[in-house]
View 1 (cartoon, helix red, strand yellow):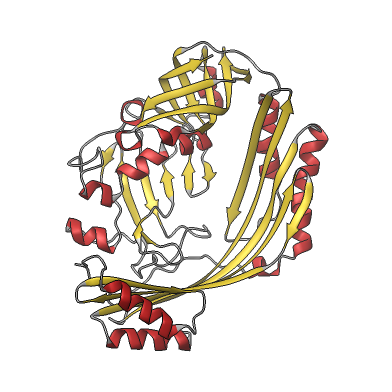
View 2: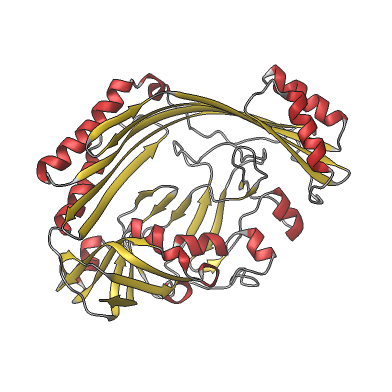
Length: 435
C-alpha cells in the first residue's frame, strides 16, 4: 500500500469507529479526431484519494487529488462527519476476492502513433464510401491502479488496462441530419477497427434513403443499441436496491414473481474477463459476483451497496460505486442479457411492415420508474416484406417495458454496448408515431 495512504488510514482509524480509503491512480492516452481531422493527443495522469469515516455513527468524507494531503483529507472528513448522515452498516472484514483478468501488458505498449493510425483508418474507410460524412471519435488507452483498505483489516488492490475506439459520423443534406456511430472497448489490445467500421458502414447503407412509415401499433426490432436506449434505463432503476427499499420501484414485492417473458434473463456480472467494468471488488471492498437479476422472466435479486443493503436487511452484492470524491451508491457492473436462437435476419423475414430501432433519443425523459419510455428514433429503419427499405425520420417510439417484455423474441446476435451485453429483441406491437 502507498505509505501516505497507509498513514492516513491509521490516523483516521484512531479518531473514528470505522474508516476506509479509496485510492485511484490512472494514466490515459486519448487521441481525438473532429470533423475528419486530428484534434488532440495528450497523455494525462491523475490520482484521487477518498477517505470515508464513521464517527459517532455519522458519515464523513474527505477528498483530495494528492495522496500526501493526509491531514487535510482527515480534517475534511471529521468536519463533514459532524453533520453527516447516520450510518448503520459495517465496512467489510478481510475476505477472499475472485481472480478477474483485467490486465494486458500489450495495452501499455500501444503507442500514440498506433492510436492515431486506428483513428485515421476508421475515418478513411468510412469517408471513402461516404465522402459527405463528417467523423468525430478516436482511440484511447488507459491503465489504473486501485486500492481499497479499511480499519477492519479489509484490503484489496488491483490494476487494470483499458483500450477503447469509437467513431460517430454526421451526414448533413440540407435540413436533414443523419447520425451514425459505433465503438468498442476491452481490457486487451483492440488489434483493428474492422468491426466498428463495418457496423457504421452498414448503418449508412441502410440509411441511404429516407422513407415514410405509418403511425400505429407496429412490430419493432430493437437492436442491441436499441435495447440499451429503450429498455435498460428503466430496468436498471427498477432493480436498484435503493429504489426498491424506498418503495419507488415497480418491482417492490415482486421478488420471485414472473414479471417478464420466460425468454428474458438478465444478470449483473462484475467478474467477466477483460471487461472494463470488471474488478475483483467494488469501490467499497466487497467482492464482486454474478448476480441473477431476472431469470426466465422471474425477478430473482436486486443489486446493493453496503448502505442500501444494511437498510434493506440484505447483503451487498458488490455493486458499490463511487465517483472520485463521492459517497458510494448502488451501480450496475455489467449487464448480460441471455441470447435466444433466432437470427436477426429471421426476425426481419417475419415482418410485413415494421421498424428496426438502432438508437432512441430522449427515452429517459418519460416516467422511467414506471417503466415508460418515449423517444425520438435517432436512427431507425423501415421494414417491408422482410427487407429494410430505408431510414425513417421524425418518428417517435413509445411503450412500457413491463408490457412489451412480456411478449418478445430474443435474437442470437449478441454484442457489447458499453456495459451491456445484449442481443436484439423483437416486440410484436409497439406504439409508433410518425409525422
